[in-house]
Length: 138
Image (tube, rainbow, N blue to C red):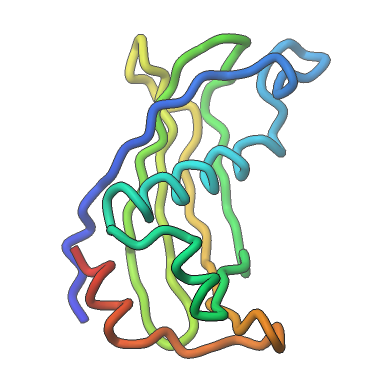
């Protein structure tokens, strides 16, 4: 299926508990930011919140993640997380993302994650149904 790679954006702000001893966001928080943005966008932009997957007995787990850190973010800084579906099929979806400083639009981080659909009951990979692929092909 051909994906339009529509980009969706979520605005966030750095909180105190996300800053490390170097006074910038700790690298481990960037994956949290991506997940927060995706949960927001799944509901708001695709019309299928994570709760709907859970009701179907399905979930998503991170299979692979790659983050390139470009500029540090600091306490209280506002930023945007932009994501899009690059590919989806079989059991996996590849999500690409960018994080940009709100004030300057300069990139802070970019990368991609592969998520695998799983059956909650068994923990095993599940084939993504065609109707879900069509819903996310926007």
